[in-house]
Length: 196
Image (cartoon, rainbow, N blue to C red):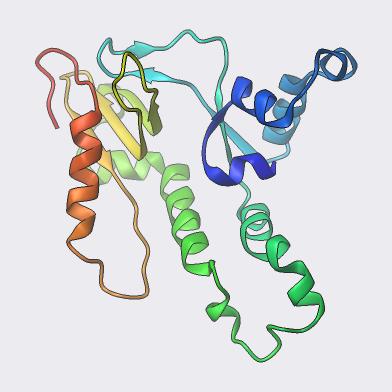
């Protein structure tokens, strides 16, 4: 599951990063292991969406991401600092000041919103019947064009695409967020007649 701390991954990417061999696959299917993590609530799966063609991509595999909030906290904040924690290095530091906690809070907020995608549709003024796709989105790089990952994308039947990036900060967000989101918008391939 640690591989998923860097974001959504395809099963083939997980297999490559783990160096999961044919011998291991013969003993236990990696796909079955991922399904078990999904059923147990630790991991979530999402299918690929092609905005340009307005259809699910038929890659034969899903994208997986960490779903369980504590697992994410443990893998990204606690486990990398386990030796320091055992030595009580953080004993006098308030829990909210732990390094990396802001990033985790942002990811937890993102997961909360994705889990409540029906509410997101409502807030954006989109009826469920109009939705072609909503959820985390990843466009792969191809033919020299860069890929892009979006926290939440909503694509409607009238070719409107809503792109939502979730940010968490103890401080006021700066204007650099605008250029970051614009950069993502510039990379997304829209359907003919489509727009943001």
